[in-house]
Image (cartoon, protein in one colour):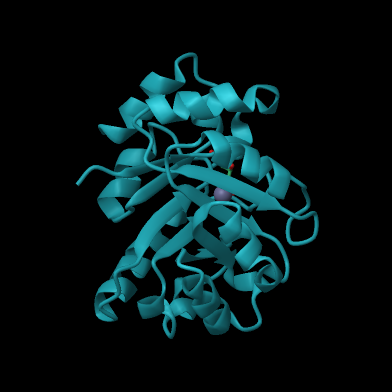
Amino acid sequence: MKPIIAPSVLASDFANLQSEVEMLNQSQADWLHIDIMDGRFVPNISFGFPVLQAIQRHAKKPLDVHLMIVEPELYIEQFRAAGAEIISVHLEACNHLHRTIQQIKATGAKAGVALNPHTSVQLLDDVISDVDLVCLMSVNPGFGGQKFIENTYRKIESLKNLIIARNSQALIEIDGGVNQQNAPLLLEKGADALVAGSFVFSSSDPLQTIANLKNL
Ligand code: DX5
Ligand code: ZN
């Protein structure tokens, strides 16, 4: 099975967002990964609804929206209305994670849960059969272009075991510092989807870089 490739729009040229999205439409990317940061859950602010809607107007691929925000339950319906097909909330940001997962599914979106590097995958034990995707952060969320955390490989193995044990259909997505060097081992350990921001957009030929990741 070829991996799902989700380039992170955070690393694109915001002054030329339409052409960046059109480039992704032409590419072998499967999803567009959209990073929403609120300056509270993470120490950075990215963009909000108007920009997401502008992306959606041009995107021909599913929008994979990663909410790095506190109280995400306040905005789920609005993100769905703005075009999100997958909505991931952080476990660390949810007091009532089970309820928020159901809330996402009730909108018709796929429900994802993201985990910070320090968060054990075992905390998903009681919800893993309800979620469509687990986003394992392989950097501390908040910024593109950071160094990949090696412990991620071990987490993928534990998560894969949990998914199998609970008969879950959840996909494993890896987010942060992904590149051509670490991608093969991530896939070997059981990753299904790879997010790549700076590796794609800072390369001289993003279309080829995406193709290389897709065809590892
Ligand atoms: C980090 C974001 C990532 C980021 C990945 O907080 O969640 O999606 O855009 O960027 P790279 O691939 O540059 O680490
Ligand atoms: Zn992300």
